[in-house]
Image 1: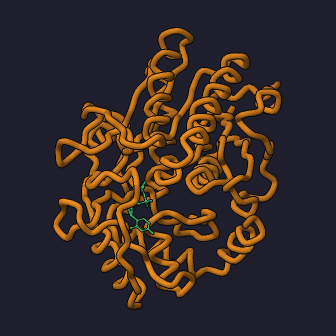
Image 2 (image 1 turned 45 degrees about the vertical axis):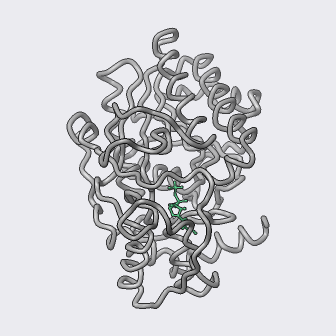
Length: 338
Ligand code: UDP
């Protein structure tokens, strides 16, 4: 039979792209989501959805009961660096306690494979230009610390309970599935690429640039943007990898090229053909100056090859989504939620 996968956070940005890709590959998928950020409109019709929270073990146990999942993909976490600094309790509860509950439920159901969403934020302020997985991990915000803690929890669970796992340290996920209907829509939106495009559309007055005094070529933060479908593709490869490899493994996912905020703006102006208004603002708490991935490990061991590696292609796909009529339902959902 086809692999049967539980996707936690399957209605969210990366999770919904994952669900679509899994279904395209003929996998059986069940979504678990609390819809705190996820969108029902992001889910294909007919898919099995369990509305629940990782902080509610009873619902989690029901999700696993009798379903025989081969693996779990865990995308359900809080992800805003700035918010994690002011509300660390929220981050540790959702990202650590929630994930521990998930591991308990997996063990109780004899499911021993997990793909975990980690982050470049585990590296803190890097000491080298390109960051490989072996780079020291010294996160500088609670979000990054919550993810690093879970990586360590997974190492211990591999040893003690035979749980196989792959943790992907995403650099900056961006873009949208070029076939349409899916994309990024957080509430409130904190991420750079969507905020740049919302400013291009006039849906926000301007793009606020958080910090212009970093030690970079133009003073703004440098990030490595990676297409959401390329991230999802790595997760597919991880399933095969875990069949032949026990233990807990970490992989970076990035393109290996860094762009400043001003360079992203310039690329977005070229893609949209619009002048994008900006305002300069103070540094955002918890931000590292430069984060660029060395992703050779994923290329060498998983055969991972990004298909939309260039910033223009990534922004183009996001722009198509932001202008598409499908964006309407998500935006209205957010408005209702607010
Ligand atoms: N950023 C910005 N304006 C925004 C959103 C983000 O200047 O409206 C900056 C942010 O401070 C960081 C970079 O863009 O330097 C990427 O931030 P994002 O939140 O997209 O991802 P992160 O790197 O925090 O995961």
